[in-house]
Image (cartoon, rainbow, N blue to C red; front, side, top):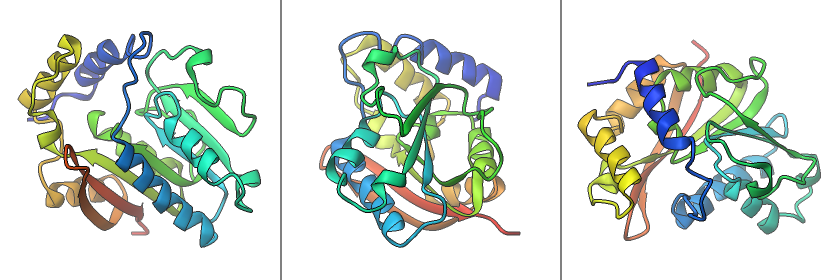
Length: 223
């Protein structure tokens, strides 16, 4: 069963509001971040359209920082512009690239992205957008350019089966399990993204021997 968007959003807001105020890291698996960066770099190397991308559910910008650190000498890095969006209330000094003029962070709602249609050549989300109401995929498709790519990494349901030692996180995971928020299989992923204007080109199940996740590459539908 699927929660109504606004009820679901209220629960998400309650969970994320203070998530980054403490000392906890709260980040995706390292291997997933490395894998996503490799896919992004491959697109940039092949001359993907506008050198501007959006990261939905970016957290403290770990993905962007690692991308800059590991590929700072690439010819396209100087012209690459990054936009990060997260609903969490993250104070500026906790953003890893707060001082970068090429990285722009907005506290915002993925259901109503504050960007023009077709603004981005690439939209990514690493273990974040699959927590959000499904309408978020429609917004991702809206801001994506006609020839652009959307790369999403989704939690496999097994990632939230084991109880968390953090009571707040365990409560949220229980909500996700009870309401079947996460995608169950590849067919469900393909169908949901198709309904939202995204054509899936590739789905790959990856793992780091602890967690499993789906790596999904899609493009804006032309039909």
